[in-house]
Each structure stands twice: as C-alpha cells, then as structure tokens.
Length: 276
Image (cartoon, rainbow, N blue to C red; front, side, top):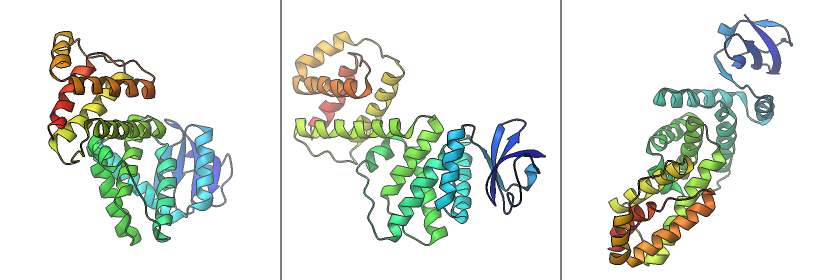
C-alpha cells in the first residue's frame, strides 16, 4: 500500500513510494474519493512514473486541465514503446514536454494548419535511432486517432526522445540541431554549391559535425594534427579558411574553445563537398 500525497484528478494521483520516493499513479477511478494521507494499492495503477520535482508535478497537474484523459493514456503507451525500444528509462519530464507538444501538434493538424520543420534531415542524420522510433510513434498516433500527422513532426518527436534519453534539456538539443543547419548554410554559400542532402559526403559531414559538437561540449579534445594542417592549408586554402570560419561559429554558439585539429577534419570533409 502507498500513501496518497496529492490527488491530481479522479484517475491520477501522487503517492509516496518506498523505492522512488514520490510517484504519479494512473488508473481508472484511482483518485476518486481519495485525499492526502489515504492508502492506495499500487497494483491498482495501470501506469506509474516518477516526478520528483514539485515544479514538474505542478506542470503535470496543469497539463491535466486541458489534455483529456484518453490522450494521457495514449501518451503513456507511447512513452512505454520508446523505453522498450531503447531498453532504457527516459527522463520522466518527457511525460510533460512530449504530451504538451503532441497535444498542440495534433490540434493544429485537425485545424488544417501545416507543420514545417526546417531541420528534419539534420535531425535524422544526427539521431537516426531516435528518428526511427519517432516515425513509429507518429504512425501509431495516426492509426489510433485516425489523422495524418505530417512528416515534419517526426523530427520534433525525435528531439524529445533524444532529450529524455540523454537527460539534456530540449533547448540544448534544439540549439545543436540549429547550429548544424547554420553551418551547412554557411558552407553552401561559401562554396557556392547546393549540397545534395542524400549525398554520402553530406551524410558524413553532418555526422562529423554532430560528433564534434559532442566532443567540444565534453572537452574531449582530439589529437594534434599540426603536420597535416600545414599541408592542407597549402593544398586547399579555400576549404581550410572556411573550416576556421565554421569553427569560429561553433565556438561562439557553444561558448567553448574548439581545438585546432578540428580544422583538419573539416577541411577534408569540405574538400570532398567542393568537388560538386
């Protein structure tokens, strides 16, 4: 038996748990007639998850004011699918952020409003596993709700999944995706090329940028490449100079120093692209 701490509505309540401290319990009629201090059988709950922060509990309570209970149940099923696919528990904040996001996304679809995602291809390249699972979730929602959510939403859902898996804020994850898109735009302008988004060299570049950002954030600096750097500076001056321009943008956005060796790897990627 668990002790009720807060009743959110007839079907959702917060209870004390011996292992997880406080948990959110969800079940038909579970909160009906209950008040703080009452006992509740944990096995009566159809779902449970942890929201340790009082702020998160308050946000979830506000969510229940405008999101109907059937959709809450559907979202819990979706989050279970994600945890099953990755064999990993997600940051519980996803119960708030993804529910809120998809609720309004579906509302816009029903109103006939189009959903644009300018970073769709960059998101797919940066987080391929999350993108695949997000695609599965959108198909699941389309089937359950008999609607047609546009493909752009797959990218947004993938970012939510990655945020919950990595336990990094959605704002930070979004900023990195936008940074990669900005760098690609600078490359196209500087080299005066329209990069084929399906070209293998483009895929390699985006993956490299993604990993470079991760390394820079973690201060995992790569080895010195001074001899090769001097050769590339002479052989490919345009691409070499462009690599430093990109590194400066990365440094300003990430507020972190970028190792000189990064110029070597970027120059090699840029040279392959410039041949187009």
